[in-house]
Length: 447
Image (tube, rainbow, N blue to C red; front, top):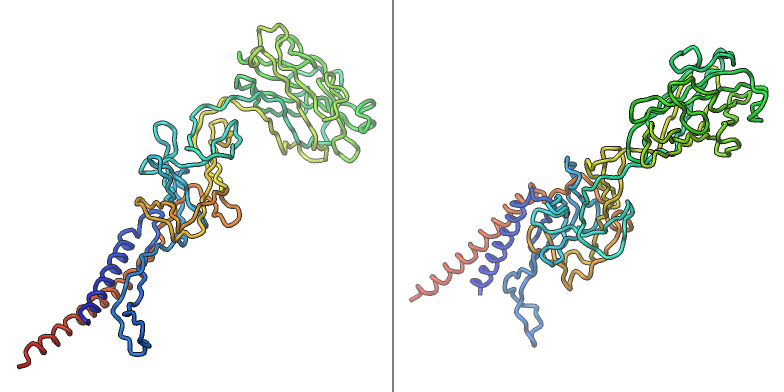
C-alpha cells in the first residue's frame, strides 16, 4: 500500500516539477500564461464502512490549469505590436482553424495581410473610405494605396490687426512689392484638386473709418484685404473679385473690406464677389482668365472661401493666432497607429490619416476551459463556452494598446520557490518508498 502511495506522490511531484519548469522556460514568452498543477487526495471507496478509520491511497493530479491573469505591458517601437489591457483575446485564423491568443506580435505579409509569427491571419473588420464596416469577421488586409489629394475649399484666419496702425491714404495704390502700400501680410499653403501646392498671400491695408458696410462697423475702422496666389509656373496672380487678372498689370482695387466695431471685435465683410455672405467669408475663384496660363487642378477650377471670424482689432501688435486650411496633397502611407478601440489608422506623408480596419476582441465565460494549441494560442472547447466578440475597450472587454506587448505573467522568483518545494516533495515521496522497502526487507529476513 505504501509503495502505491509513494509512487503517486512521485508522479504528482514530477508533474508539478514539469509544470514549474515549463513556466520558467516561458518566462520571457510574449502573451504566455503560467500553469499550475492542481491535486486531489485519493481514498478507497467503501460501501459499508463509516470511513472513520480510512487511510488515504495517495494523490491524484486533477488537472494542469492555466492562469489567465494580466501580464505586464511594455512599449515597443512597432505599431503593429498589440497588447490587450484587460480581458479578452485576439482572433486569428490558421489554415482554416480559429485560434485565440494574447500574443500581439503582428506584421504585414507580402500580400498585405496582418499575420503573426506562425502565419495565422488576424481577424477583424475591413474599412472603406475611412469608415469601419462592422459585420462578418475576415482577414485584416492593409492596402498600400496612396490617399488622393483634396483641393483647398476653405481657409480660416484668426488674427489681431493693430488698432494703432497708421491709415494708408486711399489714393495710395496697392503694390505687393511695396510694403508701404499695405500694413501687414500673411501666407498659407493651399492645394488644388491634383495636389499641386500654391501659396496664398493675404495683404491688409488700413483705410479711413467706415461709412458704408458692414453696418455693424459704420463709423469705425475698416481694413481692405488683397490676395495673391502662385500658379504651377511660379507666377503670382491677383484676385479681382471674380477671376485672376494678368499678373503683369497693376492689381485691381481692394478685394474685400473687413470691419471692426468700436470694441475691436470682428463686425463683418463686404467682399465685391460675395456680398451678403452670412458665413463672414469671401470666395476666391481659382480659375484662369484665359484658361491657359494658370493651372489649378483638373479643368483649372477651384474655389476657396476665406473666413475671418474670430479676428480682432485691439491695440496690440499684429498677430496671427490661427491659420488653417482643409486641403492636402497626395499622400503615401508612412505608418500605422492602432487606437484603444482596435481601430487601425494609416498615416500618410501629407499629414492625413484614415481607418483601414478594426481589431475586435473575443471574450469567454470560462477562459480556463480553453485548450492550449501551442505558440501561445488557444482553441475553443465546450468547457470554455462560445466566445462573444466585442469592440475593444467596451464593457468588460480590454482595450488595445498599440505599440505594446504583454509579457508572460510568470513570476520567476515565485516559480523558483515552488520548484524547491516540489523537489522536496519528490525527495520525501522517494523516502516513503525507501522506508517501505526497508520494512519489506525486514519482514523477508524474519526466520
